[in-house]
Length: 312
Image (cartoon, rainbow, N blue to C red; front, side, top):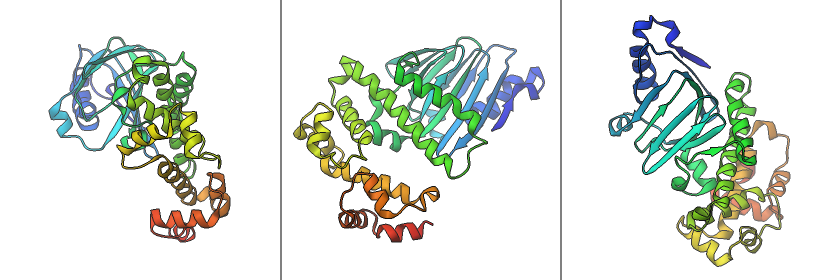
């Protein structure tokens, strides 16, 4: 983890240091606070997850159109409040978070926030397309606070806040798997929230989220056919196809595509190099090896064996 701290500069320069080095160069934020100001930032990464730990005095942050235009990347940010209390506003939604709570930010849209008292926050940037693949479009969960007192949210909070201490300990084989579990837990936590909320569960986005989460959790089951997947999500096959049609696919095609993606990742994983292609295919729900090979070649342009050799 790289570290930036106002302790490394003279107190009179602490605010300008923090604004120039951290707020502008690193996070593309506008920041204001009373003087004197003390803060430390640690940054690192686990595979495609960028991790930051802020330990700071009370301050205000804002990300407007100018800051957005100067930023790159296309991630969401999961913000986990370990200590202290903060208030964040994005769109027409306000998130009030205290120790043990977390929320999701969309950096492509303006937002503002305030750390009301000295505290520590973990911010994890996660690929937008990977979370959307698990939950559907995330408009309904952006800037919506949830607490670790709820079982699945608590599991996600505990796992995610542990990651900064593992940045320097994970090897190249383990890091992608840890990142995968982190993404799955974030999706699972928010899916459980949407199932509990009557206002959200009535929407198509919530139904799509539940459907995708259900499918993801049972991809290994060869009996997961369209009828079983729709029934487990509490909807009809027809409605499931309507939901997925907006993404240009259908229920059966989506199940096969997710299984193929899981198999592709396994073939790409050095830690699974000793597993046979058949073992991988069967473990992700395929029951016919020739059918799997045909589908894989149609999706990725080469046979599973050729893919593994190319990425060895």
